[in-house]
Structure formats: structure tokens, C-alpha cells
Length: 318
Image 1 (cartoon, one colour):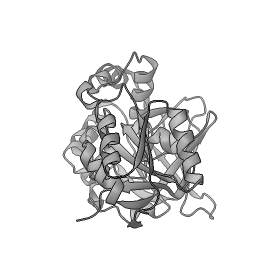
Image 2 (image 1 turned 60 degrees about the vertical axis):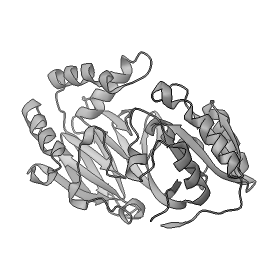
Image 3 (image 1 turned 180 degrees about the vertical axis):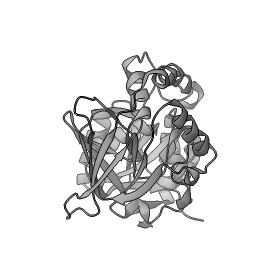
């Protein structure tokens, strides 16, 4: 669902992560503040996540907030969504290692373009996923998964020292590829929020997509094309599961995913659920979970959808 953004609120909070992105891009939040001021907005750059989100919530309740801008990568946007109230309008200035949400919506790393989007763009109401484990609940914008990639992310963050780059993934990818045992994930899903979970599925690798975005140019759901206007706000998640494990099966999967021909994989299954429970088929196994590229504890996990929880300010359609 899309509509013109409300022209009356004039306050903008720009949250920036001083460690995100290339050094030459770190001046862009200040440039964005200047361009917003030229357009008649009262904008402020805030480097502290809690302060920025708290101010955005206060301004939103007062009816004065035009947007909070997440200047950073997908992780920064996810943090903002998790810390702001429903209905808070969110824009993004993509500066991080991965900017999948921005890329999907055609948002460029350009202060002038983002200022124009805030001034004249459109509001897109999108579903948000929610993953609940023993550690608590976490909202996600793109996807949640249990399997090899979650193990890679777990190892990456366990050994993290400073900022993450694409090169940071090499060591955990190699170590996980050599030692991961591909335990079976049991999935019990319900087609709608009001129905009991009755569909039982099994997988060696399971991914629940809210938007068809994944790092490394991997295309898990190419059959749906680029138009996710309806699917992004339909109150359901797309479960993509792979039934086989092991090094050679995974290599086979990755080749077809990189080629954008995932439909050629016979052991890949896709269906939609409004909510699902993921757990280890063998209770002795500890299977990690990741959401939007960040570790999210271990299974079991309850995954559901918050319909149209995110109000994203996106470029206007030409």
C-alpha cells in the first residue's frame, strides 16, 4: 500500500552510524541535514541509537516527525524498526556493508536524492517479520533462516573484531563449510494468523522471507520477479526450504542461486505461511537462527508477521 507522504510535519532525525560504510561516505549524513534544511525541514544528526529513536518516538507522538533516517546498512535500519513505535515513518541513507532493503526499493547512497525522497516521496506500508526465541523477540525486515548461513553468521559474530566487511565472511564460510553437520529443522506452519499450525515440513536449510532480499546476489525466489508490491504487505511469509544437506548439495544449491535459477533445484520447496515454528527435529541439536544478517539465538523459534508494521519512505514512482 502506498500513498503520498504527509507534507505538514517538518522535523527529521538522522541517525548515523559513524563506523558504517566507506570513510568518504561518512560525510553524507551532514550533507543530508544541510539539504533538508534548504528544503525547509528542521533536521538533526544524532549518532546515538537510543537517543535518536527516543526523539523520533516523541516527535511522532506530537505529530511533528517527518521521518527518522537510518544512515547505515540493513542492520541500522533493523535496529531503528525494533526501537521505534508502530507508525513512525522511516527513511534510509544506505551506507553499510549490505543495503538490501534500500536496493530493493531503489534508494541510492545520495544525500540529494534521499532529501528529495523525504520531501516528495511516498509512504510504503510493509509487513515486518518477528522471530521469538528463548532470548526474546526480534523484528526483521528481510528474512530469517536456520541452517548453514545462520551458522556462518554465528561464527562471524563470535569472532568479530571491529567493523564487518565482505572479506570478514571468508573464514567463517570456510570453517562452517568444512564442519557444519546440517541437522534437520522441523517446521510447523499455519496459513493464516487465526488458524492452528497444522502443516509439518522438514528441511536441512530453512529461510522465511518477508522480502526477497539476500546478500551475495543469491536469488532464492526468482519465480516471483521484481514486483513484490502485494506480497510485501499480504500478512504472510514465503518459506523456502532445502531438503538435502552436505557440502556437495550446498555447492549445487549455490550455483543455481547465483545463476538466478533456483526453480531448477528439485529439493527446494516454496510455500506461504502466516506463522511458523522452527525447531530441531533432534532435541539434542543446537541449530542457530539469524535474522537480517544478525545472529538471533537458537531454535526453537516462533516466526510470525506484523502486518504493515513498517512505514518506509521510498522514492516516488515515475
